Amino acid sequence: MNFGEKFRRFLAGRYGMDALNKAIFIVTLILLVLLWFFPNRFLELAVLILLVIGYFRFLSRNIPARYRENRLFLEMTGKPRRFFRKRKYRFDQRQTYRFFRCPKCRQEVRVPRGKGKISITCPKCGERFVKKS
Image 1 (tube, helix red, strand yellow):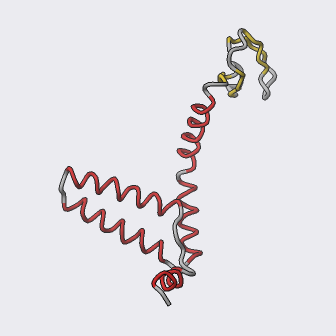
Image 2 (cartoon, helix red, strand yellow; image 1 turned 180 degrees about the vertical axis):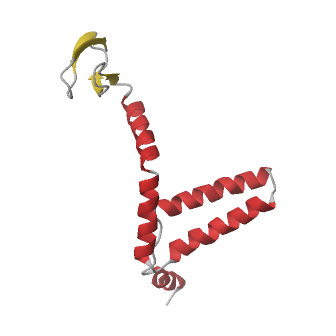
Image 3 (cartoon, helix red, strand yellow; image 1 turned 60 degrees about the horizontal axis):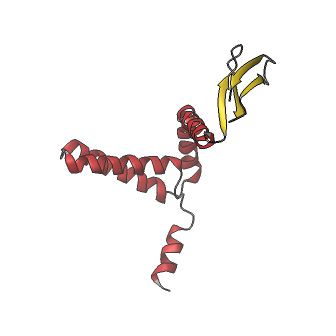
């Protein structure tokens, strides 16, 4: 049995990587870069603790507990993730669409670019308003 097979067997049944582990390792990398520029015992200890926690979660066989931790993390970070996902979506669509807010209900409406002055009907409240696309 070669090393690769032994390693695969070792990892079988382990929890592996999830969103919380990715966040832990990203924060660890950021702290390592800071540690490069600002040597500090506290940062060294924080990096060590985060690495231990990250590897513990990665190699854990207690899958339900790790799943609960990840779900709680995702619930806590849901609003900021939605905010940035929405900004990315709008940024990706900026070449072909314009975004306007309904003056009555504040619903965001997407319209094609380059159509001149157009009358926009809000899909939520039915309010009509004119904007230049």
